[in-house]
Length: 269
Image 1: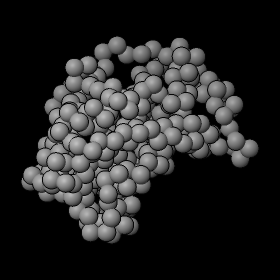
Image 2: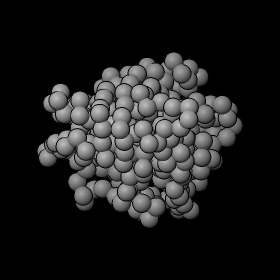
Image 3: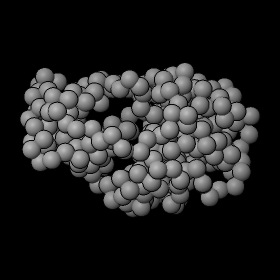
Image 4: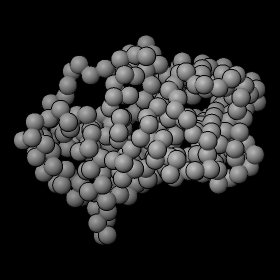
């Protein structure tokens, strides 16, 4: 386990309820397309890695698939069990999954490879447990960041927020370019064939208070940045958030900004 992995385990501990309020609708958007890319249908034996609140697992169950779902965070598993009682759920942490080789017809990972310290090793583990001819599909956030995520960068810059210089990160030699070419290359390096990667774009609408709540509660990299600020700077962040988000509000009072994800899939030879 790398320093980045340890940071992720600590950071996400107990965060399921905050995550459910602000990020579940956002991260759910590409889940159906991810299942399509993995050819998940009735009878498919599918593993949902990093299931979180069980969004992809629930969609797969609705298709009649035989679903196993795992997550590294116990609060997420408790939430997933309430939301998707028909799935088999257990605790597991990439890149060490407790399944034999060639065990599943399909493996999906919705916004999980953003949170591992060695993405190539993790994809190799997904490849290990999918049968020959089975499929893997995954999503990650792209780089550069879309407008929805850039809003927070603009807010922090306007408030003069201090960026911690010593936060663990994925080492450059283990990371991959979060582009169509880079993400597709990550799957090809794991010997997957028929690799396809595309950008899925949409306009996310959310209550501005919910979008504030997620970061203020410490969710994600920006949540950690918020938590590192003194109270006076947090007050400045709130003021700039209200000002900068106001121009993106709909007539109904929802925050509406474009965002996007990368969706990559491949077949095990």
